[in-house]
Length: 379
Image (tube, rainbow, N blue to C red; front, side, top):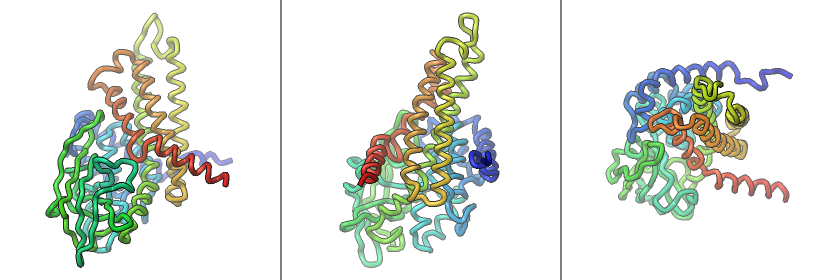
């Protein structure tokens, strides 16, 4: 059997090297950026110069491929997340925040915004959650109303990545018996943003306030009342890339733990050969390789047919993020007090790993969905 079946094709390995080069370039300021509440200008400049954001836009609007390639995005996120959560988020959100527009937007609006997304000339955001609504999006209070040849959006979105820094947001709101996705430019009258929250791994995060935001009807993305289908398409394409980011973070944690334990002696031997430490390091390696294999397999399937591969992508997301949590926890343990130092790499990775198990579908919500699929298979 060909070994090529179990390796990334050459085009993806070249892309991996490009992303790793970017990660090395931002290393001097990655720790600073990872503590930032707003988009770091140096990080934005480096990502723009790399050209990697053209991966998240269709070729017709300045992108690299005819359509977004989930495996390409996953491979890049693995490399970027190994160095900086801020960089990883900035790259990923260009796709997550604009994908629905590329699939269902009006031609005039796509032509206005997508080329800017591809070059990082405009920052994208996706606004789903609300103060009282997280995973249960069918209870959204934000409304979309038709008014002649315009739509009016009213509501409050909360915990929105790039909130306050994005140039536009795809906002999901209730319209009649359905839900509609609307592109809301940050400069629209009635729109404002605030930054009332921050999390344990600092993140560009804000609340959006939409006070009767009136927009041309062509700012509706996709058919009115059918916004959920575009949100699902976005998740189907990008959820698996979270697995790639988690693998990159876990690999960085293992690498740091190896450097420390191999270079420090206790009781006359390297810590890496002391007591349970070898087993802890080896177990982490096993879990990373398992997670990487599933992430690549799921991402390749999502590249072919995102919706058909959603269950596999969900498995990869759960498996990799849960593994990353275990790996970075072991890294702290084997490094002892050095793993606890505020501002150290492991401490930063430890905080960064925790939110991965919640955003873009928490572990428990995804497992409940997968369990339902299992039960359907019995009928």
